[in-house]
Amino acid sequence: MTAPATAYSRILLKLSGEALMGDDAFGINRGTVEMIVAQVKEVADLGVQVGVVIGGGNIFRGVSLGAAGMDRATADYMGMLATVINALALQDAMNRAGLPARVQSALNIEPVCEPYIRGKAMRYLEEGKVVIFAAGTGNPFFTTDTAAALRGREMEAQIVLKATKVDGVYTADPNKDPRATRYESITFDEAFVKNLKVMDATALALCRDQKLPINVFSIFKVGALRRVVLGNPRARWSTPRDGDPMALAIADIKKQAAEKMAKSIDTLKHDLAKVRTGRAHVGLLDHLRVDYYGTGTPINQVANVTLVDARTIGVQPYEKKMVQTIERAIRDSDLGVNPATSGDMIRVPMPPLTEERRKELTKIVKHEGEEAKVAVRNVRRDANTHLKDMLKKHEVSEDDEKRAQDEVQKLTDKSVQDIDKLVAEKEKELMAL
Picture 1 (cartoon, helix red, strand yellow):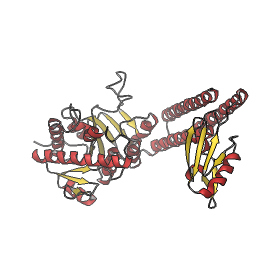
Picture 2 (cartoon, one colour):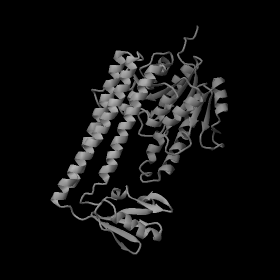
Picture 3 (cartoon, helix red, strand yellow):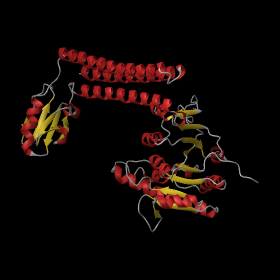
Picture 4 (cartoon, helix red, strand yellow):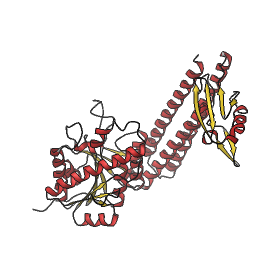
């Protein structure tokens, strides 16, 4: 009997560590692993080459309480080792099922498994072996989602398949929100704008930039992986229109608008931090710079800035010769404070604000908020002007131009809401006794 034609000849399957738990609290559920292996074998028997990136949450969850407060890099390395355990379990289950598999680790632990070597991994795939990539990227601060995007591109996979407990991408977690609806398809840029959390932002950005599509499906449905490989997807994340230049140009306009609006909000946050309230907080000094060996350097890079109490900031210079320079910079700033030095410690008391001064500062805060809104709306104007120019040149359809303008407006509305929230919070601080 002739095998059915598949939509992909090489895939990268991303499995979370939690997927191996089944119904257990943590660890590896043998029945669940065998079910996953059966699905992988089913597509491998169709001639599809399979790479797998595995997470470690099922094991690290058991020690997560003990890791609370631990150095982030150390905790991440522990998580990487957990993925190696899962990879070895998966390899053993595959070999017992008659499916040849190899584990390659981004961390060098040769007595246990091979180190990651791209050329060797490619050869294994071409030989029909499943390659299980362990230890993430080998670097802390990067998730196994990012490792999946990276290995998918390196292995020249045609798609990254994210195996989860839900059958696609939803507007919200369908297990928690009965009103959640599933997307039939969604672009990467839409995923960023809507802040969807199926994969982390770094992984999404890498897949988008490398034009590597993603499909999200439930690994717990019988035959689900086979159906995806045969081209019957649920929700699919992809580059707009799979690389259509005009769609990509629209996506770039929206991306630039989102970045510029975010920058306007960041500027507002910085400006509001300079507005002194009656209470002390270390961020008040963030905008102050001092001369440090001929270079204007933020105070918090040449001194340890802490809170002595609710109304006093403590500044401890790393070099004693900087004490007078820092004290002078604080006194001459626009904060209206009078620092005092005792030894090599600079104390910056926050004098209480008068009612009149509070009202003046509230006006300043509102003005800063309005300026930020103007900046955001200018970004909207520029984006819409660009879209209208494309329409005049017949580079986009009226529907595409209208749809893009609607999305830019949603970005604008969200940014204005964020600005209003920042202003309201600052006003509340100012008026607090």
